[in-house]
Image 1 (tube, rainbow, N blue to C red):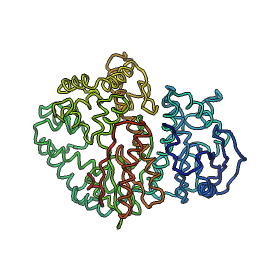
Image 2 (cartoon, rainbow, N blue to C red):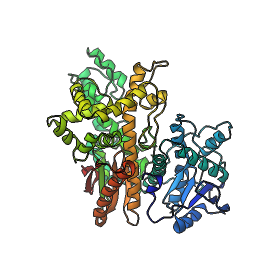
Image 3 (cartoon, rainbow, N blue to C red):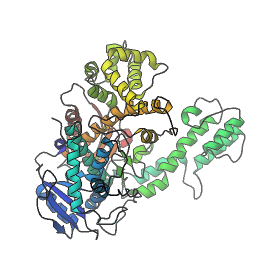
Image 4 (cartoon, helix red, strand yellow):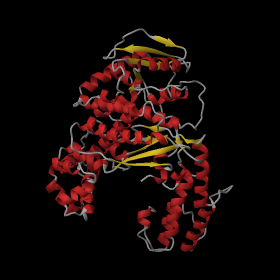
Amino acid sequence: MINGENVVPPGQNEGVLTAVVADPDGRGGRLQDLRADGTAAGPVRHAADLAGAIGEREAADHPRWVWPATAELYPPLLRAGVRVARCHDLELTEALLSGHAGRWGEPRSVAAARARLHGLPVPPDPPPRAAEPPGFAQAALFEAAGAPAGSVGLDDVREVYADQLARTARTEHPGRFRLLTAAESAGALIGAEMGHTGLPWRADVHDRVLRDLLGPPQPVGPPRRLAELTAEINAAFGTHGLHPDLPAEVVRAFARAGIEVPNTRAWVLQKIDHPAVRPLLEFKELYRIWTAHGWAWCDAWVSEGRFRPEYVPGGVVSGRWATRGGGALQVPKVVRRAVLADPGWTFVVADAGQLEPRVLAAISGDERLADAAAAGDLYAALAADSFDGDRAKAKLALLGAMYGQTGGAAIPALAVLRRRYPTAFEFVEHAARVGEAGGLVRSWLGRTCPPSAGALREAGLDPPEEAEPGGAEGRARGRFTRNFVVQATAAEWALVLLATLRTALEGSKAEMVLFVHDEVVVHCPAEEADRVVAAVHESAAQAGRLLFGNTTVRFPLDVSVVGAYADAK
């Protein structure tokens, strides 16, 4: 059976619910036990020390905390040394329910949800907080972000929670949606914990890496290697004063050389025969490292041997995570050499290979594709079954179906896929048709894609003001929805893996320190590595069972035990 309680740590009292809000003074707060339907089950208790009260209650009963927003309440608790096992995040749940109802992107705060319940003017959500530098100490333990402190009361929390329960029960698959909201709330806890713990980071090694790549930092201007490359590029164009970090200048330089280029992206430059291309490509790579993960970045984001980004669970429309500052999800591989385990500790790095094709096999109900997904290498199994052993062609066909690549070499491969795996092929084709017609599609658990204009903008597209559903906008949206149903479900699988792994690691010293799409990094004492590896594999299998029940589809992980993150497979 699939339900939202399956991510509850075993042995804990699943029936205990406690609502909590912070006081205007930023240190105290109010707590109240709730019944399963969200109604009050006891008196309101005021605590002058809210963190202390939550810590005591957590140790005694491990309740599910019902609170407005994990991102606001949990980091102060972590700074006070308090961790909780589970929560219900009202803001994250409201966003999921609004999207499910076709109102993606509407204000999601408790105040907004209550206003909608009573037909009152809906206040906008406050703007996102700016990322705080590591070690930043707030004047008060708890602070409301952008809203008057104390503006949300326990009555509001109870009422909104009860309404969310009722709306969840009215969804097409309530059990799946409960799992989604529970996993989303657990992900918010994990994101805050990872940001608090931090990723081990050696500033001295980072400095050596940068000096090897760029030369020593300069008091003013770019480091030596970038200056040298700038001179080479100018010489190749026969110019002086060209700034290679400005794409418009580079495009004009190529035009003067008789070469028209639409932009300066690497794949465009690689097709050009010109002496400026090689130094330009190197400049682009090194300039990105210098500006995004250089010395200034290290000074701002690394403290006490840890890189502490602020994760934003569900920050992408598909449910994937984002970060607010720090660029934790885009750390270049060469810079990862600075990520070294503490003495006596090691990293367990687990990556889910071929995740999205396996998810397609599970959600489409295509038995033949599911049989192939029972193998360790899904593409090799497909190749042996239907593509005369050509693994590359099998991969091209499956990725083409999921991402809407329908031309060129993909055409004959897709024809084979359509004939041999018709159920899976029709699943993504149907999602594309719904999207092209302006409709909404959902992930397996119920996350809903944005309406057409929002979907295109979030996908990085700029739709025309008035486009027919069958025109360019419709086709682009079809490609978006075709992949959304798979990618959003893959994000759910990864989120449930994180939640189950967090439970499995309880009682150990192991700590999750990084999560990037389909990859999780655990930092643990060397003697606990075998246990962590086993826990990671079991969590992957359990995530598959919780989402898809009894399926033949396997979700294998590539797991490395390394002292340096850069050495992981």
